[in-house]
Length: 208
Length: 139
Image (tube, rainbow over all chains, first blue to last red; front, side, top):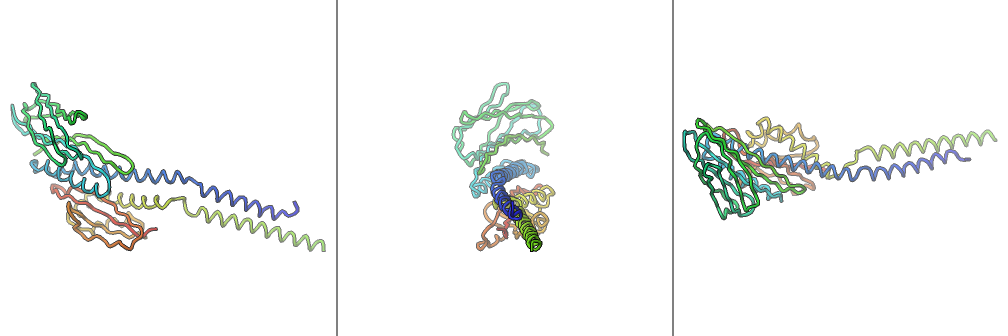
């Protein structure tokens, strides 16, 4: 080893080559995966925003119970329009029921909103002593449908929502003679660029 | 004579070592001065920063009120702490059919982002709004 200094130079060059290779390859797949994950989180946040605002629509309409279904339908349409602009799909099924404050036998009004991007063959069944069934053979997309059931105040019921014989969901209906009750059932789907987000939930309100 | 050669060799050795250290130093600084990030990663971060800003303003009730009042200046001022200083941004409010406030002219901008937030209205007042934050000024 006559030229010890040159050994340093050669070692430095080798080390630089190694560092460059490492830097180029460093976590690139991880970075791409992380950015996809972040994009996914962003879509999920947007889905939560939509779900929260659909619920908020009921809370905002609290003092005008007659407007609840119309406002939920309107906000569903608004959301779908905005989703379409973003090349994302929004599917929404809503069932809202209102039981008035009264004693004994009364009517429970139920509204169904179809924003599922397809017509449905809808069946609603209430598990009263004699089960009551209501059908709508062709409930078109972008529509709402109002029906009523006979109830006895103070009794709890199960309302079964069925469409196209592929969907079956039970909604718990609680009635109280001294309270105006509103129950909203939400089935929300957002088909994002990477993932599909789905949520089903029920909210119960005591109206003034 | 022999001493002179030895002295020269010593100088050369020092010089070569010094050059090696310099080369290594500069390459390390150059390669690792910025953390590895794809441009896509950066834009998503800006999107998230703007979205989180909107989310926080919504939680405090300020966004809801300003959106219903069509007050974009107020929203822009409140968003300022959430976005990096070098970014430009503008807030536009839409109702169900059209924009209520002016959309910025971004035709000459190479990269732009649009971050959207939906609102059903304010307390006891159904008035659906879409708040869009347009962000530009990044590579």
